[in-house]
Amino acid sequence: MGTSYSITVVADQPAPVDLEQRIEATLDMIDQSMSTYKTDSEISQFNAQPVAEPQMISPQFADVLDISKLVWEQSDGAFDPTVGPLVDLWGFGPVLTDNVIPGDEQIALALENTGYQHLSIDMQMISKSSPIRLDLSAVAKGYAVDQIADLLEMLALPDYLVEVGGEMRLSGSNPKGQPWRIAIEMPAVLPQVQQVISAHNAAIATSGDYRNYFEQDGVRYSHSIDPRTGKPIRHSLASVTVVGETCAEADAWATALMVLGEEQGMLLAEQLGLAIYMLVKEGEEFKAISSEAFAPYLIKSESIQQEP
Image 1 (cartoon, rainbow, N blue to C red):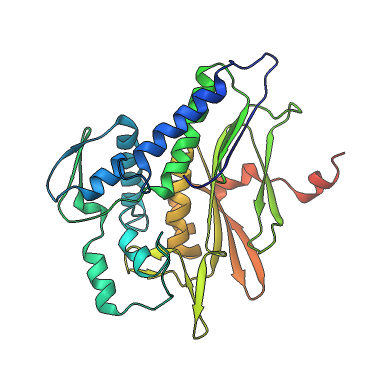
Image 2 (image 1 turned 90 degrees about the vertical axis):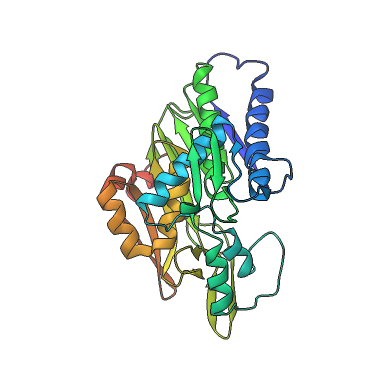
């Protein structure tokens, strides 16, 4: 997946001797299914598949497509795994290009080859009605976290923290026997802690646009592309953190809310009962806002300072 992972398991008994191998096998299975860099992966085979020709997929691939469809529908298209051609057009894809602003005709043409509505899913068979190309990078890492967490629970290891590329899921207690504490990073070049949250059983995912962008003629162009307009987002939302039951959904929602922005995103989060924490840029500073469902996870700075 082009990233790192970290797993902490707290137990008073030795872990299974083959635990590392089982974790690696789980990650390899997901990578082989959803990697756009492997020509023989399921997703690469689908992207090369002719229009209207069906393809059988694995249960894992079907699960991720179902999650993607749900978030796509509930976000009114703000989350769309077919946005790849637009990302490439703006120079943020895997092939490095000069930062040239595409014209309206180029954007319109790319939009014709995007849209999750062109994907048909019937049990474990999928097909497309337009030459769309899937990219599940905004949900696959979260799904990998869930699969590893499920493996640990199956092995009766209920106290853990699983992290893949910054997305995570945690359960039970940390090595001190206390709730896990996770730091939300301030959107800055050098990592700084903005807020610490506490949780027993939760999945956490963050999306931001403060590192991957380019500027031209004084205008900042974010790597976060709005699938509905085909253009980079222009609002002031710098990052959004989502806490949910599964990391796959939290991962997808972080991307969707990043596209929607602080006003539309917060309104939708309150309607759906999503626990979210946003950092909004105001001049040179950042304003923190959070949904009602996020309140139980916040730790007051006073309680952090008083700890030994």
